[in-house]
Length: 157
Ligand code: HEM
Image (cartoon, rainbow, N blue to C red; front, side, top):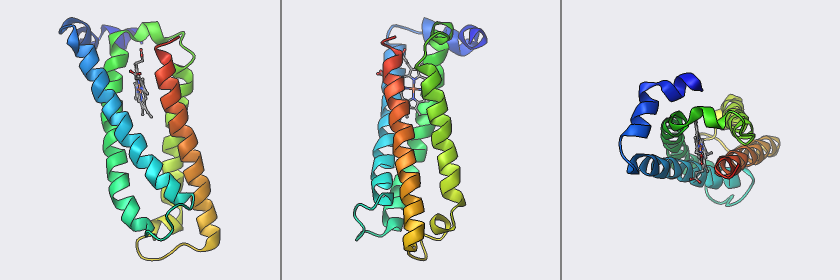
């Protein structure tokens, strides 16, 4: 944390004007909103909502928007962290947020390992596969909601 705070990025964030932090924070929120907005629609579909709409029709746009939002959130988040990294060391919400993000990413790996997901553009999942997809969708909602809640709470500690 001390290294990050003392880095060129940390200096840039602190010394490049009063609006810098606010603008980067706005970019962070736009990234988070895009990530969670897309993930919410995909996860609800995995949980069984809107069965009449093909999963592939929903996965195509939502996966792209979620991935883009995630990259934007990570890049802007590192900038926010660099501003005053050492002040976050004692913040318990940081230690909830990052494991939640890690678990969310592991869940994405788990989803991508399922043959039902790999083949969802060419065939419908069986009822057993649908249950597995629903579990993944539920875990995903839990992870990203936890990350958002902890992220919001960091500032209030
Ligand atoms: C490497 C990735 C990330 C880093 C380093 C990071 C870091 C940060 C930092 C330092 C803050 C400011 C806390 C404060 O002092 O108020 C913040 C805010 C926040 N982060 Fe992240 N973040 C990352 C990714 C994410 C992701 C993926 C999400 C959502 C799933 C997220 C959700 C939030 C939320 C909701 C806030 C509160 C913003 C506000 O209320 O103004 N962050 N993040």
